Image (cartoon, rainbow, N blue to C red; front, top):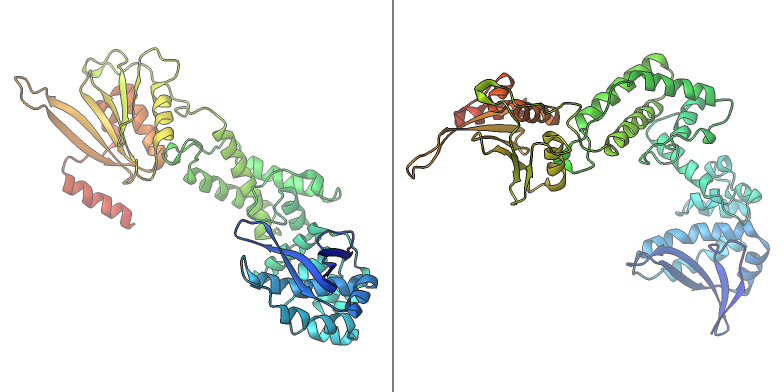
Length: 420
């Protein structure tokens, strides 16, 4: 039978329970293999309970010192009960100077104390008892998060000025640099907001008119990494030039914001052919009308595009790629059966082959094809080649060469490019 003897307002601060006539300290900490909080229990005495009842600071200090022992127990291990009990007298019954000395020797959870109002400067000077004079039962988790964020920056040698901190708070990345940035003007002190907005305006002007395209090779919502890097470089340079005193973290968060917003706009726009139009096939070689095109991949998927379809042939093709591309599915083909020609895109090798029927193979003979290869420069290069083929067939690809019919020559060219 277990009865709760003493508890505080915050449910996470350790409770005192009576179990079969014996006093126990109970606290929730860590998590088990199913990510559920674990409960740890160890015995205490009446003298310890008396201090816990009347002295919030000592109670919180004990909690801070026991938490590392709970972390060491992991998801399944047992709490080192002897080590936990050994903390009781030194923390709850000793003089403040002795408590300070103990905390200079043991591991303890600094963030927990900061969340409950500890004076950070005094903590850093090792005066833990004095730091806890303003302790509160209620917790302010954001205060601890800010401390940890500042500590991580200090470890990297980063010192933020008021404007730097305000810019990071505006983007929501002051606490967590990996958080997707967003615009949060309400998080910035009113006196600093105009300066922050001038920094943002500089970034917006730098990337006006540029965008981050979709990259269907990596999935339906993927975007072009080259476009991202190009925009980030442009914004970084403009912000540094206009605001040279800004810290690197502040500059980076602004470019991250611009790129994230541009990528989101692209993801939320239907797949298209980057503003191009299919038009009719070039009249060269008798191509005077739009053909039916067949799209395939290496996994047996197939899709046909017919003249008069509501979407362009290029848009339909890239939609097809976005739906089916994967690490083990990186070869896609567009075929014009009527004209006897097609292109094959090799995403794994950044290359493309154009295939033209030379001989139909009459009388049961096998058709004869001419296959020529070309290197491709990223998703932008693929888009240009696909659009050119859709508009004018293989003949329209001539200007996008050089084209190599010798496989060995092509492989040497590919190795030279990859070695650069």
